[in-house]
Image (tube, rainbow, N blue to C red; front, side):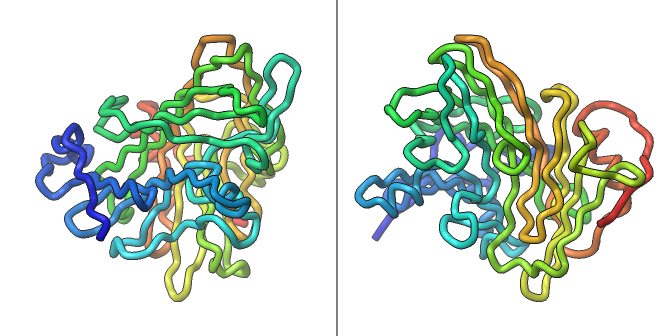
Length: 312
């Protein structure tokens, strides 16, 4: 029987905005290669960090770390894991198909011959609220570590009608020389992929701009994806922080639901770059633009007015 490890450093973590601590736990299942963030008996999220190189298929299936998001009951993930269509699309994940160091390009998106390897968990706390941090090494085809990442995932008290609030922060340090994050919106950035079973005929996106064109527009403050799994409709609000890299395009038009920001930039040698995104997850109808903008303002600390929108 595999027994979970309850991380002692995390016992004091509370849901952001809440005084609750006794029902919140972080349980690690090292022999299964995942860590669960739980509220009582409900699984809020599952961080997948297994690394198994015993066969070509297992090597590929475990070559990148990612975060599963669970349904409101805490029983099943609403995000996609390994396998299925576009098998490198997994949960909430981050990567670039053109990670350039010293003139050499490495593909840390498709992870064919490259890898993102979880090294350890720490009790480091970043930003508002409390969260877990995974130290991840991004390795090229020769095994050399190109980036050392601290990936912090915080589950906070969700504003109604959302049932989940997830802050995803990635701090990447260029340890092998100046590193350029590049590629294209289809194969790079910080992305969300719903489960394989999504009803492709019902996927829609809401944009904070009249006559929006995501293939040309830059720097959306937020984007919402609406998708259906079985008889349930979900809304995922992607909040982009103003401190993130500029001139960012959002890939938000695929019927299978992979969407997110394509951030491009350069990290000088031995320096770091941080990206911060907040996800709000709703089971039910699309919220109003006013509500979404309120949540964006709460995340950014700004007071932006509600924009005109485009749903398509």
